[in-house]
Length: 362
Image (cartoon, rainbow, N blue to C red; front, side, top):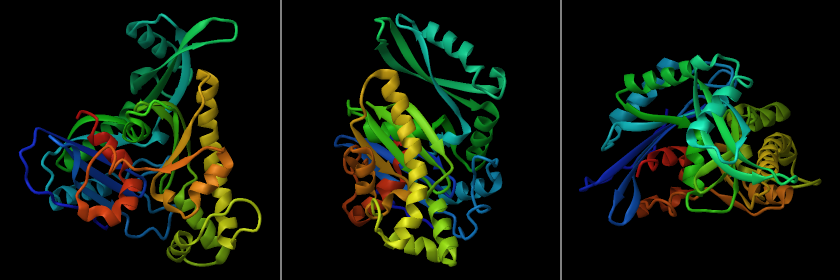
């Protein structure tokens, strides 16, 4: 278990937000404080699995497994003990692979009550569990006009097994935190990366064991896609192809440059098929949004553990023909202590979801 943290000086603070992002190979926590100068990240912690040599078995959670409850509790307890968080009341994220999502049509004149009724009536067709065992959230995507002139309202609903909501809440509570709210990780990322931006953005979050693709604008997510192909998938592919350890493969992967098209370096040709699967899912989220709303995605934002590969921006630009930005919540949406300058690329890549959770109520 490794920690990165900063202990800010005690301040006279009006509001403090804490976000806990439980990933597949790490736990990230961010504290954001509202001061006269705006929002500032005043503390953070990152606890990562020390042994990732067996990527299939060494995971805190995955789409096919229940979370390792005791391991997660220990990680969170250790974070609480080692950091000087000014509050222990936190917003908590759940991984996107736990949810079922879909865009549905409701009448254009629908009220909030009508939308809720339509979501409950439609959701059952998409869910493997009874509605009584499911926690539902939805987002009003907006009104669209079809070619025949009829108008409808698009609603994105997200359904999570209530059992999982209770499970994660209990983990955090036993670790000494009070859970104020729970939401899907893509909702948090949308808030962190697109709040204040009117143009639709495609967020590609390449995680340790899964990747999430979200179209968002104004801090709200409008379309979602997910795949189990991830940063560790690429590492395992390099390890198998070169008959080396995953640790060595991870180091080589980080040193390599991703090239688009033929003639790339050997490592690039091993990694790009994995990226291709992830980008296919990103393209699917883009198509869902553009087909449903008639709007065009204007840019791509990349974040997550696997987003720091050299050449990745240009690779995605060549594929999607869109400008590609790296996550930069720290330094734009929230301020930071100057001593963190050298760590900004890593922190921005890894703390996106935790920051989105922390600023939710600020």
